[in-house]
Image 1 (cartoon, protein in one colour):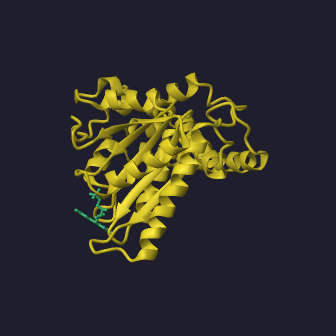
Image 2 (spheres, rainbow, N blue to C red):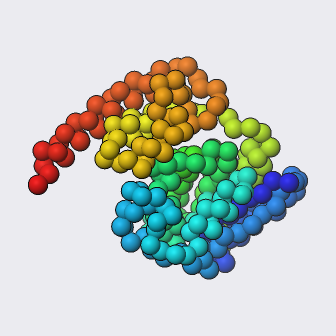
Image 3 (cartoon, helix red, strand yellow):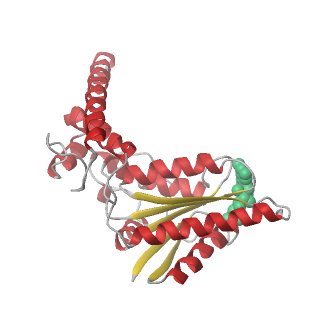
Length: 267
Ligand SMILES: Cc1cc2nc3c(=O)[nH]c(=O)nc-3n(C[C@H](O)[C@H](O)[C@H](O)COP(=O)(O)O)c2cc1C
């Protein structure tokens, strides 16, 4: 039985919740899956205070004592996570953004490599593509394999038949792709994923003592070793590897220059 956790960023039981439940019903039709919902509106998740302690010392030193560690544990226990947010002001909801801010240390120390992600948003008219692109970047950098995305447009007036059908087809396709992903091993990383690996590696190698906690995390996992091609032992397309290695040299040079600039401007 595969476990799916929905991170629900809507403050109400509305369109986004119905869309997630639509995916649940479709996936249950395909078999062997159980859903769990993390309703951010009910979670005790305070806004990030911007103290940098999670980056510099580790997330266990966060001064906020709330549901964050439990939410991370639930993501680890799931096989797949659905990141679900309505479009609010051309972006994710405030609830969802608080969730991302509180897990910002994962951008530095990625970890969800065995997990699949499905991205889900609903909007009245505009902004769904930008939100899906944003969710895509978050999920990938956190280590997820993004298996599908669904953006539903649900205006506050009755939907014309063709648009209603398009939403149903979007849900069908997303549910099928996500369900299939849960029953297969991780795919070979895309060029985008390989570039992310090399870009981050250059950054955390070069930052060294300026970000010792992150540097040590990367080192302890063997990701800074020359022969490491990706976070996990998976086939990497040799052309992607070559492009990633070139990009890594470029990023490393930029980081070195930036660090030199910081030293000069320090008082
Ligand atoms: C505060 C707020 C901001 C919104 N901003 C946008 C927007 O920028 N673009 C858009 O197309 N719809 C916008 N909408 C409409 C919602 O995205 C849309 O109704 C969505 O399906 C609501 O999902 P929910 O029922 O899960 O809350 C907004 C709605 C609210 C309440």
